[in-house]
Length: 465
Picture 1: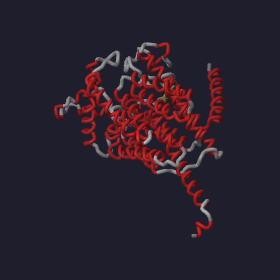
Picture 2 (picture 1 turned 45 degrees about the horizontal axis):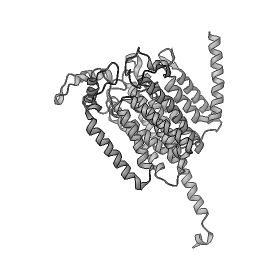
Picture 3 (picture 1 turned 90 degrees about the horizontal axis):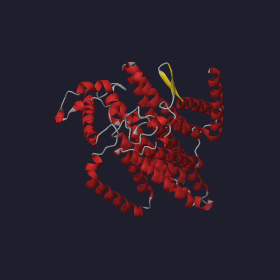
Picture 4 (picture 1 turned 180 degrees about the vertical axis):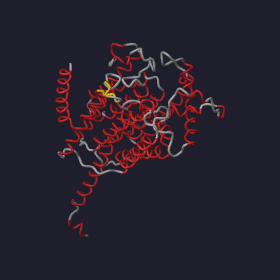
């Protein structure tokens, strides 16, 4: 058996080398993302001491090794550090110091495992993406890959909610031994909010491919978009609906001609207001999980203010250092006996924090949460600066718009779920952010070259005058 496994590992390594050499660092990153979504620890893993090894993590190791070789041989693109890189580094210095300062061995070393798998692995992909080479073909291929992957996600989502288990793969997605979120589209990440973020990313990519295809291609893109919308609806998660919707609004609000922008956005707001006014109770109360009643769905809305009050009380006690990275679950219990403003805080007992920034505020204090917020703001600034420059090549601006749409989706879901704990969501965010910074630097060099060319093209007489 050991010999067979060794042979399979050798064959896989040879294929990986071939794939990375043909597709480069970007293709390697996409391979890690796809494997992490579909073939991660839920699909297969084995333990090496306290660490779980899965296929996507082995591919991540191969990607880092390939990057190291490419860096040594000069095959990567040298790019200087940016302000966002420095703040991101400062954020992780705070996280590591927090993990060391508090008990990192509690709950089977949960702080260490969360730091490694939900943060440091994504940080590695971020760094690789920062130094990859990007061209129009690369970005359009990336959009096409996300759109094609969306077909799989959309089919899986619709099949889950309609009992078509023969269409669902991997099989653990539809398995009934895990009842959490069963009955709605939880996808290969086993989380409806995570599935909604993925579907929203694929939907935005599909829409952005529109200017790059012909009539037949646009027909296929239209069908794909409808499938993805059905997939988003199948999550039965209000934040997934809002996130995908805000992503489309971001694209529409920035990409459509200025003279049509206000009427179209006004019509969207009017429709949204009409739906909210007439269907509010239905939106609050509907049965979505097989193991959950409609009343429980409505109660989930009332839970958010309770969780926010618990977080603010915890923050007030430790505003600078927080309670410790990945220590929320045991530390919040001591606040549940209080009833400020008549709120039953004891209802928060079985739940983790449902807000990304509040969770960082509680666990890392004001310094950690502030640094993370600054990093997000700097990433947004880079995307916005690329998009708003009309002289920047269209494919660069398209990726900037993709990042803005994804961020709208991520932010909406992140305000109601701690999506940093959903497998692969941080990995996708960091990959897109690393790519965005690289494209921003390439766009700046393009602008400098364009300015230099214009200066050189000025006639000598005009220059003398």
